[in-house]
Amino acid sequence: MSERRFRAREIRREAAELAFEREHLPQVSNGEEFEYRISGKPSHIANFTKGLPHDVNTGLLKDPDDYQQFVRGIDSGDVRDFKDTPLGPKRDEARIPIWESQIAKNEIPMPRNDGKPVEVRAWESQGAGLTFDLQGPDAQSVTMPPAPKLDSAELVAEMIEVYLMALLRDRPFSLLRNSVAAPPEDIQRAIRLLNNSEWIKYTDNSSLSTVEQRRRRGAIDAQNLFRGITPGDDVGPYISQFLLIGNQPLGAPNPTDPSPDGFIRYGSIRIDQRVRVAELGKDYMTTREAWIDVQNGADVRGFETYEENPAYRFIATPRDLATYVHYDALYEAYLNACLLMLEMKVPFDRGIPFQLPDSIDKQQGFAQFGGPHILSLVTEVATRALKAVRFQKFNVHRRLRPEGVGGLVDRFKNGKTTGIEVIETLVNGLGDKLLNLVAEHNRIQNQNPDRVNDESSKAPSYLLPMAFPEGSPMHPSYGAGHATVAGACVTILKAFFDHGAELKLPNQDGNYFAYEASDDGSYLQKVAIDGPLTVEGELNKLASNISIGRNWAGVHYFTDYIESIRLGEEIALGILKEQKLTYGENFSMTVPLFDGGTVRI
Image 1 (cartoon, helix red, strand yellow):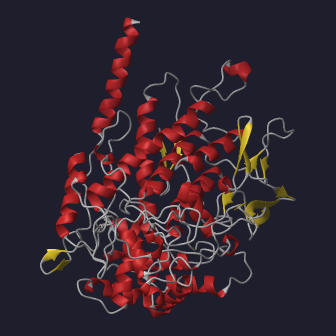
Image 2 (cartoon, one colour; image 1 turned 135 degrees about the horizontal axis):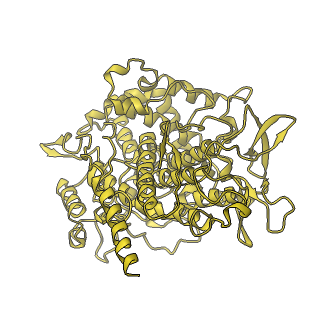
Image 3 (tube, rainbow, N blue to C red; image 1 turned 45 degrees about the horizontal axis):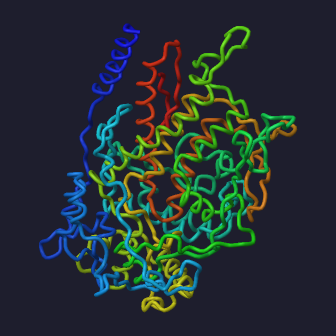
């Protein structure tokens, strides 16, 4: 035992040395934080200021010094600094926040209404990036490149995309395929508007940085519209099979077959892939009052409304996907995917031991290289990913959320341009055709009883329609927590499972099919596809679905997705490399990367 004791210490030292030898890359923001000024003072209009006191007339920070206090707490990690940071609007004599909108005043008829104005929301885990971990890359050793600036062609394309996503939230995903005979006009219009953006149609890459070239997309069509750009994203239906299918119940005659009933077996119980159906056609934050209250931290979470007939359905529309990522447990989609693949007997990576017949190996994988190993590890990486991305969010980039950019666009379009002149490039790039569609959409939204009495409900509104009443979470946009966790968890799954294996899905007379929700989400239907779906492709698509599902909700941009899954991938690879030191078996894992190529561990 004494020898074991010393060997255990040596393994820990080897892992620590491996972590120490990783290069700690410089952390670089886009430099906008102090670039824009009003009366000589930084306005911080390109940065996340949600929760700090904002002027109800301008929508801008009341006092730039509040932002500095905010940053002071982020940098120090001292809870006292954050307790000294102003949060929310003015309060009345009874210490109740003074709100502007019906929804924050709690004047709307709904079960939650107790007649009292809502309280404020606190910021979320702003000190997580300062913590240390005993495994995997240090939260501050990894990085993300600078985010696009307010006057960049890239941001114009991103905002065109999130505005279009908001307008198309209730269109079936079945329309986003080249196999659809004649895509409807709104889908064709979305394709035209994106392809006409300078960022998409630009052909001279020589003036772009390497980072910008890596995330540029080619021409848009019905098959890749609003999809990710990793291998497999543009193959088959929009939604990954892992968000739709189920597996066979305990005792079924064909236990490895996928099931179109959508039930996933959790041991002897099962769960349902169907999601709660949010009220169709209803968006939020479309009046100036609701928008400013949310920027001031109004806690209107849970004020969204739902359908009752049906109450649940398969993910059929972007609104369904947005609802999924509104309340998911972050790693649940990947845990489900792992359970599905284990039950379907998807083979492990060929370099992993204990895959020969029992009569030869004389042992099976379980605590190591078996189900419990992969099931626990696919969730374990999530917390490491969250710490790394929190450092990027709060300590480095502090990027403004899309809802904040929408507020600047609305202000500029309504003739209030002082202090936000830089937004002119963005407004011109969005174009009147798109913004007029947004104004008409918001006009209809503002007839809802939860905002009809807001003073601005009759005025043209160019705000970004949000899927959630509270808009984004209380942390900056870049990177994205969901996307970083997606990148990490999917990388673990691709490391353990044979990524080139075909998913066992319907195959009739040599023709390949995949499952897709019917347009009303009541059942899964078979859709013909050109070839088989692979483990890698559907896992990549799963990561993109969850990440871009947040874009469909209005809370993230495309760059938040793509750079964050890369960050998560790096975290997972680091953990796998360190953990390999702890096993006595001679094994390897070949991991396909989101940008192509593979890493062998």
